[in-house]
Length: 157
Image (cartoon, rainbow, N blue to C red):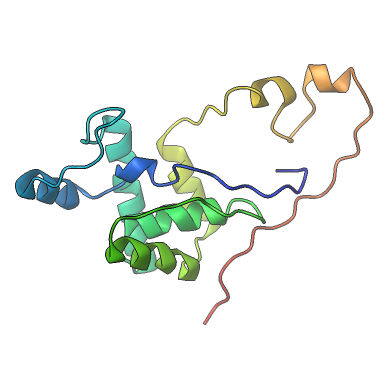
């Protein structure tokens, strides 16, 4: 985000699939399940891995909500991030708001990023990610690199 633009990421909570094993088992038992419009309601292996990693960080920061950690992670990656999140229950709203009080360390962010390989895809594969100019961009103009602005983090209490 070297251009200083704001982000409004969608699907931050993976369509409700970021949940603990206990939450998934509870859904299985009570029949609540989840959305099935574009696939099964159960988590795939990558969603289970990320949920476990979020659970580890949740324990470190003192929260029970892995979704709060996921939202905090996204909000602390870039300075101007306003995730589009939803919820069907009061508990969802409560855990979403809890994200505003979570301050993640650089180590925790690096840990979460080490769990799964991230492929940003097109157009980043063509224009680059800001760490260096892509061949295509370097042949078109001169660019002055601006320093990165630090993400906004919760104030320490």
